[in-house]
Length: 201
Length: 89
Image 1 (spheres, rainbow over the protein chains, first blue to last red):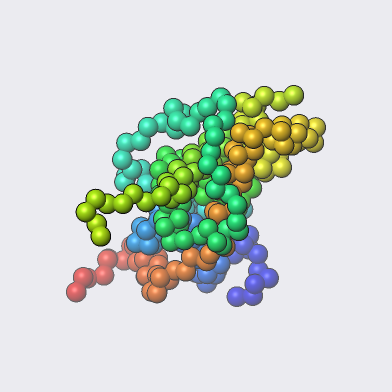
Image 2 (image 1 turned 90 degrees about the vertical axis):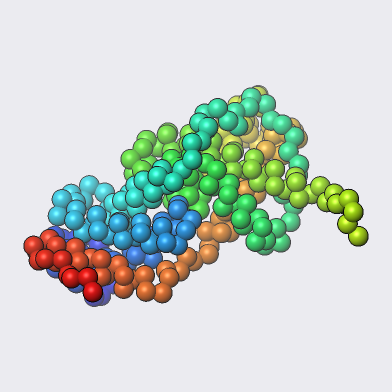
């Protein structure tokens, strides 16, 4: 199908049971949906389940899709909800983020910022970055991933998650601080000289 | 003059260039003269750079993922048309 056909047209045809049109929507969005799902659930098997669940829901709901938002916003909203449900099922009880990382004046943070990103990036740091996201409550993970990893605007994130822009900004700020604090802890630990193990040669 | 508390609360908006110009200038002035707030700003900036670097990585769908998705949707089509589910072999 020519790329010039808009999503709106494909949605219209899908509503009329044009299976090729729905197939084209899958082709356009499956890798983006999978990518977002994988970033949210951090596991290829769960990401594939989210992908299937997302397009199943889209297939079942396409006739009632009113077009108040774009198809892409709609499909990402379904993805985010599906991933959130999966995360909630797996999530261990967490302390409310409201109680954490609130400080009125800045504390000294070891300076881990010099040097280009490429030099800092190691597999260990990558794991720590994933763990930092995982340590956030699911609702904050969603905002952080959509905004700072997928690089969507505050307005888009608000539309996808059905939140106000103010709520997105508030969650984002808290999530960023918490993630930063975790990485600061990692860099601070890795800067300390390794202790010699007694008895080691 | 902004306090450290006000600067910290506005760091995200400052990083996103989502504030009025006069506040931006006040933020710049404070961060330039307060080493604690500068450390907060620098580390938050680097945190976002690290994740943006990761954002450039393409997450490739596993082999067979597309075919399995198509199969799931074909089963759904059959179900919605009232056909009996295929027999498990």
